Image 1 (cartoon, helix red, strand yellow):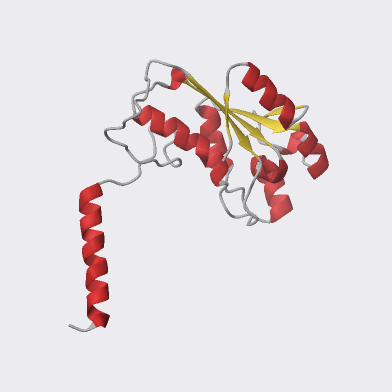
Image 2: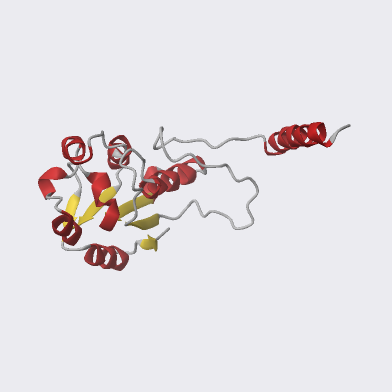
Length: 182
């Protein structure tokens, strides 16, 4: 058999074996249906304590340069919610806050403000609203608001404006939230 045929056959066999062994795909939901797909991890060695409350604050400062691209950092909160809910935790046990600043500031603009500035619809709007409906707290840095020219009137309703991201991060950690930075 020639080498040109063996390589593709080997690749197909590897894919079939791998898919058969893993036998799963990522799933979104049950909290955020269209975002935040995660893998089911069977037989973990470090057990999830489903009787505790998890309080997480995500420091969201980066954003893709392409205004049509979804901010995957924001989606991290959806993954956090979905993976813990899929693993048996209730929504009451999952307290999530996102502190948004720097380049990510544009991702929480209202549809009208985003379209006016970037000429396209805000790809993050639907996900932000779903996260808000799930009880996720969004806090926008007042320093980023002013330095980047994004007034409070231009942000998605329900997002809180703070003095600064630094202030919000410290206060949330004082309230028992644990910082998650990716």
